[in-house]
Length: 386
Image (cartoon, rainbow, N blue to C red):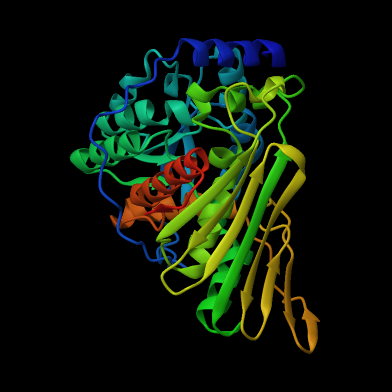
């Protein structure tokens, strides 16, 4: 059995050695606005075979959140593992009943093409490595689920989309909040007019990033691996929430950054970002992200008749909704659900039914385009049209 330090060292060595693909010169045009479906029809055949997933990257998030969710999944199962730590992989293979022949290193990853038990490759690596492994998975003839942010550049996002399209394979980005019951309920209430005409949205996401205390935070302060700081990592929740709550795409963005560069955590990436989005209907969204505050994961939508709070809004397992009107506040009875299992089942259903995922590569591309526009705005100190 591997020790924690050995597993972590192996992962760090892989990330240091991994080469990042250079961004292509031509940036793709604006992505079309994507509809946000509230629910997806489950498979009618309960006996339908489970779709096999290969997990690429066995870090903290994969081990503690995603892999346990397969136990609650109706249509997905783990059939392969990819890691730079043979000891850790052996331990997890035993835990999840994965055949030793379906355990791969990063060096022999491409041989996964010969494994019929693998239908989907799930990339749970730092963002700077997503493009390389999505492309390689597609070239191996596998469907792909990748964590967010989708990549660290617009060009890499487009390259990932093109590779999966060329291979005839599905590409989905793991926007777990779009499969979470409270967020889906909020979207439905706004869409149904329960708040009246939507006027304003706020969303805040922050946490303390402590690479000296938590090895899982080490890559987050390395720009080559993370692509940026709090905006890329957790600000994307605020950004994506503003888009799915309004059901619109912003036409203008503006951002301000505040970072103490004497703090060793922020030599390469930003700490705080405050940003505003202007939508075609006139709705404004004010959002924040930070790496130096107590954990916050909240959003609020203001309508002409009522407001809706989700706090926490993007937690792993606990959410809270409040609706306020002139008569007072109420807490709707929304049932918690396993967003991770729902996300996995949706991907499995898309593979089995040959349908486009609710959060396809184009959804990830749109967020990265907006994030790049926000960085541009923060740098220039003025609004940017998108």
